Length: 238
Length: 238
DNA sequence: CGCCATTTTGAAGGTTTTCAATGTCAGTGG
DNA sequence: CCACTGACATTGAAAACCTTCAAAATGGCG
Image 1 (cartoon, rainbow over the protein chains, first blue to last red):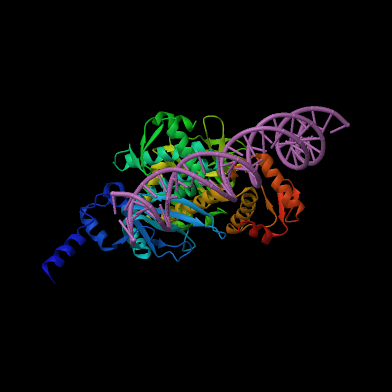
Image 2: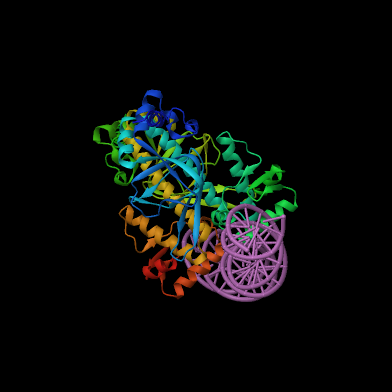
């Protein structure tokens, strides 16, 4: 083995300790000695834009944690309609399943780096580390509250309100993981935003145009957007 | 203390052992000796129709488990719009919160019996019983997949499809807890169904009328409904 | 039986979708 | 260097679906 390979291996084994998103991720509850063991039960994997991580109804063998990049999780209907269930960011945990089948498909948006856990091994690990089980429970509970909020967004808000909520949520999310929250970047396409908000791409585009002409947002590029008047966005949501 | 009171107390202390919904509830993972201790950290409470259990944004001090009856959990917007996040059934666990505040309001539908847990005490109990923490994690994960499905319903399905999904889901839910799944009862009002599905009461009523005239469902009473042709319902959802 | 709440039905109106065309931008090749 | 291409985004007009407003019907309960 070359010294270069040895260095890489060393670095790989140490990756949890130097992980940038650890403090926003469920593994934050582990102290340093447990962390070493923990890194042994996961593997790091890279994906490229539009690559699938898994498909809805696949047997659910793994669980995932994002270390770099973004993921969209979505459900497909038989006739081709698509609903994006969520956009995921660094620190987010995904792979939820029902009856041992994934409940959605997952796809990389741009370059992606994730930690992969074997479901059975992680499950065994949880038995020995109730702290981690509790942390995962809290994280999942948190996800559940976000999903519930989205139910209200899709059930009751009109197009303008949905867009306003969407922009503010992204801003909040970035603040939560310590990134600048204005301007914000929209890594997903307009179609993705539409499929996320239960709207068509045309409606999304029109609403963005409205916000632009009301000087509430300003587009640096079509994916880089400055919230000129966040208060006005807030007031959209009643 | 009268012997009657003593008997009641005895019965009360033993209630987990004779609980009818234990096998569908998160406490199913405890064996008999642990169950005794477990019943000590919960209290049983009764509610009547339309009584609030808690209100959204209240400090989240308790967690709840339904033993008898139904609950609706809902979010209110400032302008009075309401979205029902979920209808809950015996065995369901609720009280999810974010930043120590309940994420929704909870209200009894009809007579209700629930187990109440102090959040801190339960949390301590989880440390000592990782099995229970894992069971709660699984239950919460399961809830999350249901919420995700609902996101797709509200984001992509039209009125007829939403109603069909709703009826089939109730039927499934009843099967899951071992009840007859046809005919099914709808304990909630039409308005509740509308607020659950992101529709108006008029649209719900019209869709029910359509199903009725297509001989797909038959109303014994307005809240007791027989699925004459479940396959036709299924085909609505594509 | 009659009252009141709930549900159903009808007609008009509005928001979002659909269909179609135009505009923008990054990458490619002449 | 710039025209060309194709993907993505924006804009316009017509249509569809659901809502809103209004009225009638049903049904539980005193």
